[in-house]
Length: 310
Image (cartoon, rainbow, N blue to C red; front, side, top):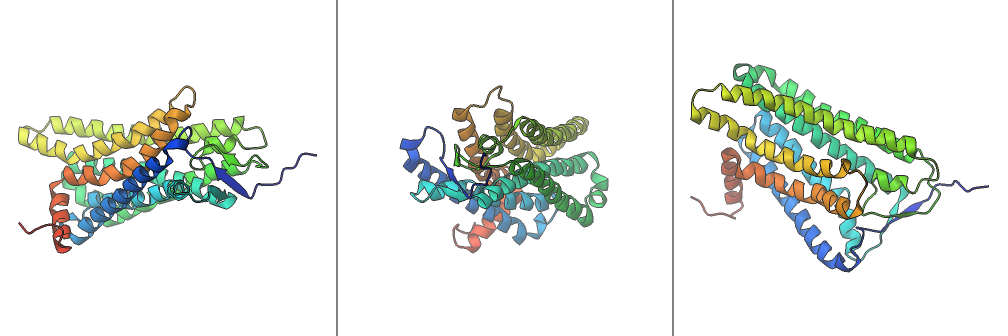
C-alpha cells in the first residue's frame, strides 16, 4: 500500500542553475533588501511627519509602503538565509505560511493599485466631490477591503494547494514555496487544481488591471478637456508616479503568467524582480516624482542630521 503520510520538512533547492553564483546573489539580494526596507521606512516617516500629506492618496501610499516592507520578507529573507550558508530546510507549516503570505501581500498590493487609481479618478474627474467621496470612513473601508479580499484569495490558493497529499519527494526546485513547484511534489492528480489555481491567480490581477484601465481612460478624457497646458501638465504629473509603479508591478506578472510554457531561466529572475526590485523602486518613484514627498523627506533627513539645512 502506498504511503500517503505528509512530509514534515521540505528542502529549497534555490534558483535553478545558479550554484556558482550564490555569493554574488547573496550580496545583490541583501543590498536590494536593505534599500527596500530603508526606502519604504523613509516614505512612511515622511508622510506621517507631515500634516500636509495626511490625505487619502498618501494614506494608501503608506499602506503600499507597509506591503513593500513585508513582501520582500516572505520569500527573499529565507533565500538570504540559505545563500549565506545556512540550512535550506523549511518546515511544511513554514512552506504553507510562505505561500499564503506571498499571495496575500501580492493580492493586497494589486488591490491597492486599483484603489489608488480610483482615488486619482475621483480627484481629477470629480474634484468638487473629492472630500466627500474619499472621506475617512470610505478610505478606512477601502483599506480594510484590500486586506480582507487579499486574505480571502490567499486562503483559497493555500487551501487549494495544500489539500493535496505530499508524501515525497521533498525537494522544492525553486527558491520559495510557490504553487507550480509545490504541485510537482503532490502525490495525486493536479490537473484540476492547476486549472482552478491558474484561473484564480490570473483573474484577480486581470480584473484589477481592467478597473485601473477604466479609471485612467476617464482621467485622460477629463485631462484633455482642461483648456490650459499648465493645468493638463499638473493633472498628468499627479498620475505619473502611480502609472510608473503599476507598469513595474504588472510587467513581471505578465511575463510569468502569459508564457506558453514555464521557463525556469525566465521565471526566477522575474520573480526576484517582483519580490525585491519593484518594492525597492516604489519609494524612489513616489519621492522623485512628487514635490510634497520630496520636501517632507528632506525635512525628515534633516532632523536626523543626514542633510544640511537649506
